[in-house]
Picture (cartoon, rainbow, N blue to C red):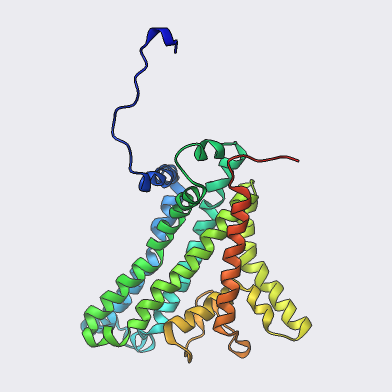
Length: 300
């Protein structure tokens, strides 16, 4: 406006606290996702397995209901133990992979393709806060699918069994929480890194599945050709499943991982090696994000 009119007035309202300004990023991102009917249906359907698991826990402790349904034999087969909760976590984690493949490619790539990243970073956002804002969308949605209902199921089983059961099975609760976070952190970083480097959304989503399935097949081929077992480090299901086994049952597991995260017991990989491989993958994703998330791009 013209200066001579002297009608300019500075902003006199309340300022948002600096520590929570980055929350504007996930707020608008979640608002956009809420408009997707397919995503809403898929997300609601993802809670079907936790509901079934809760019904199984209830029937396990209700003799009258078992007799009415004539399900005594089924109840004898199903046992509420570490394997039960590990299978729950494995199923929900696979659904989280589909969710990340659908949402992840659209978080960063539009900002890079349309040159909007300098506008973000010109505001009081750092690069770390920008990444945290985008990552929090996936972290929130996947948490509500994995460890949150898992701990609710654990609390329900502890309520029906009693305090002694909960005290003797605290490792299961810890396994649900930390096991889910291992998968969530790695999957979130991978989805954001692929979204930053691959601007075509379908290709980025396909690459996410490729890392999960194709890399596992490539690692198995290395094992057969080289007569070794270290190719399993390329298999995300095997690496994550190994860490879950240790979290849920310790050094001498009785289960072989969760659904879709089975572990080859004949060629087991040490837990410390799986941890190192997963940490290296996360650092690689952070490096990829650091190369792309910049306020200005210099073209040589």
